[in-house]
Image (cartoon, rainbow, N blue to C red; front, side, top):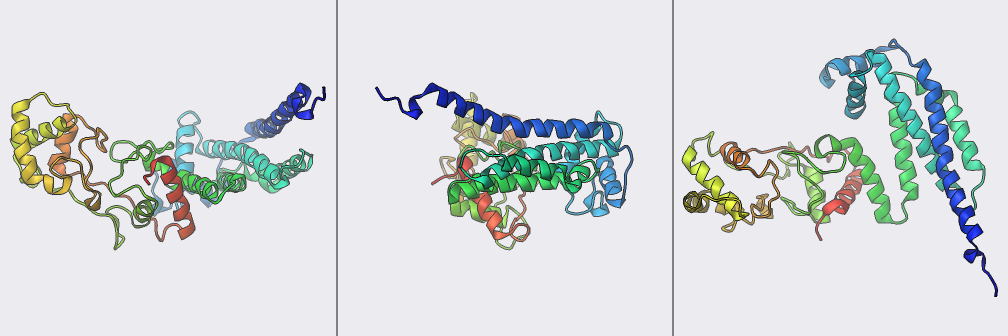
Length: 351
């Protein structure tokens, strides 16, 4: 009986060991980098930029250059978190920078490994990692109380993910995911899960449609933004503008709850149905199914932007709510906007 190489368990074990080494070696270098920097974190600020970052930890205000534009919100937010346990602003900033430098080494490993290609693992990608991480510019910049190291780590990650992509769509998704982490997580969350007032992008429930073209228009033009073609819809402020009294608002809320089987006050539901038909059906539809051409949400699916409890619904009717998303056209280049569109579509887009 002839045994082929791919049938030999020793080959499988060797392959598994090789993959483990490819993963473990960059991690070991990153850990060594971190441990060699931690004892030497600065306790003082070195220049005007670092002073501005420190002021940003105390009182974040980009208009006052605390820090300077574009404001580096993620970097400052991380430094603020570290500052809760590290008294010195300089040390907190430098610690975030050093951790970013260590993570950048992992990205270097992925980047150089993919540059080497699919041939048998050699030493060149390892040598390239060591040379890069020990270069004075990389080594010493990581310990500065500035965002440079974090920015470089993010750029290396984008490059590594770009090379890892195996198709145009994977390329766009990887690039869009990196852009999402820089520009969108502040509102939509790191997992795009959203929060009250900021939609969940994973649930395939869209106010203005979830196709590639719909999402591209929403991302480009924004929602209630300053763009001339922004998505816009404004629910009347029925309570604040005295368009409905408190009783009518209560009844309308009960009817809305009944659409998803959550109301037990049948008398209020009956009254609310009349109020809904007169005040709400023109946008939300007679059955409350919503209309994407108007940006009016479906009220029957138990997916709520501001919450589906009765107090939350009453407040929505009373105030009209009305959140805002900036228009990214002009802020991001067209290619990045397209990549973001593909990424968001991959999370929970429609057809």
